[in-house]
Structure formats: structure tokens, C-alpha cells
Length: 143
Image 1 (cartoon, helix red, strand yellow):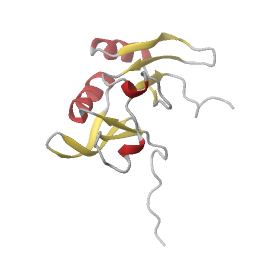
Image 2 (cartoon, rainbow, N blue to C red):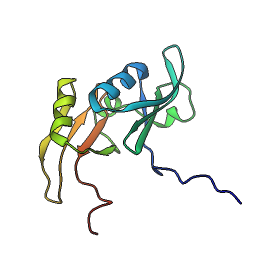
Image 3 (cartoon, helix red, strand yellow):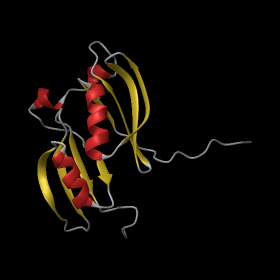
Image 4 (cartoon, rainbow, N blue to C red):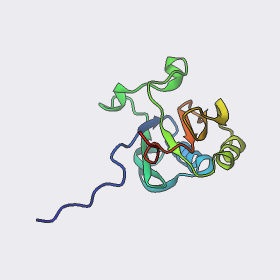
């Protein structure tokens, strides 16, 4: 019996954006994501997959009346607060920080060495989603 290949990443954050086409371009330019797939009708993105290393985020447009989208609020609807945040492991945190800030990312927690190891920073994208970028790799750290 043949089995499908094991997925590269078994947990994939999903985000919604009011201007998903602009968000895709910004995430690729500012954070270094690459487009894997984008399914859209004009300015409405039904589903997009952006990769970074062996990880991925999926995103789509905010759509009124959507069963999935109706369960998600945008950061500006809840005072900029978040209930979750993607964490992305990067090889050169300082270079990534410079790239993101040059593209207009709003820094929430400035870049610094972390007590638990590695170096990292937190920022907001143009629609207010909170992201963490750091060099700490929990898969390589001793438990």
C-alpha cells in the first residue's frame, strides 16, 4: 500500500486580510515569503499559500458572510490585540529585521538576544497582524 509523502509542516497558520493581494506582495517583499499558490477572482483571494523555508502560511481575503471568515476578526476590530501569532525561524535575524523595517513593518518588540536562546523581534504587518521572527529553533534545542 502506498502512502502519501509526509507533509513538510503539519501546522500552518491561516490569516485573513482586507486587501489580500497587497498583503501577499508585502509579505513576500518585506518578510521574504514566496508565492506557492494564489487562487483569486480579481481582488478577492479565496486561498493563497506562501512559503518560507519548509514552513507555510495560508491566507485569504476577508469576506462578509463566509462561514470560516465569520469566525475571525481583524486586529483593528479588537484594539490591535491578537490571540495568536506566527513565529518564523530565520537564519539572519538582523538582516531580516532591516528588510522588514525598510518595508514599513511596525516594530512591537525590538530585536534582542533572548534569555532562552537565539535572537528575535516582533512586528506588525500593514493590517496589524503580529509576527515573531527569530533565530531560536526549538526543534534543535535540548528539551
